[in-house]
Image (cartoon, rainbow, N blue to C red; front, side, top):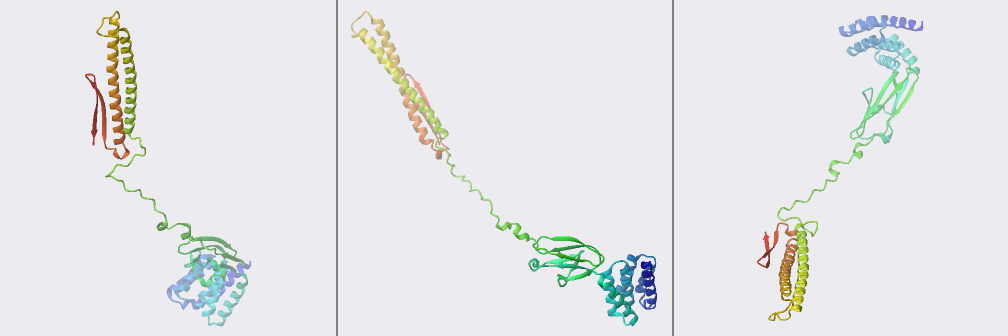
Length: 333
């Protein structure tokens, strides 16, 4: 019942100001008439938009009063209070002044307030704040500002800092909401500049003119030298054994026939022993020759097979021909 009385009262007030509206230019008058019609139809949001548009085309006290009445019925108390205050700055008619004053005074105790608190520690260079995407002037920081009830997104950003936002709900009447802006995270401290990052160590340039030294003294040639040396040692040992056997056979033959010029009963046996001793002696000589040649070759291989001489090639081939031992040594540079 009360809302119906208020609507009838608002319509009556608007009709009282209708002559003033007719004095407006055509666009403002058309918008004003749309606002009146929409108010009668109960379409408050559209009516308020029409009155606001009419006021933008041509600001007048009567239009502002009607805009205030529309917003008051639409529970936009802060916007209604602001419209009545603006009407007072333009109204010259005492009746309009009284009406705007009465409504502004009646609404003011019911207003809700939103404070965006910005501590000194949060005031970084370039800080910018917004309320529902609309910029908030720094003059309005830390002040309780009348606002309509509803949802508000408070956001902020600053160069080189992480962006921040929060959402608050403001009641239609009597609310006192405060939002504190934190100190934004400094992104320059969260990452190491590219220029300050250590560069990976570059590998030393490869030496193409000289071969790299081997990690071990036992190069392939020196390993071959050890093998050849082992063959030489075995050959010398075999030569020693064969030599001992040859001497043993000759000693046994001498015991049977001490004088070769004198015939003896065991002459055949002594001859056989002498032949065996001679054969063993030949084999011993060959073994000693091979052993000596192998050791000499091993020594040469060892010295030329040093790590810095990796490009050299040495081949040692023992050779026995006509009862003579020889060592073929081939060196490749």
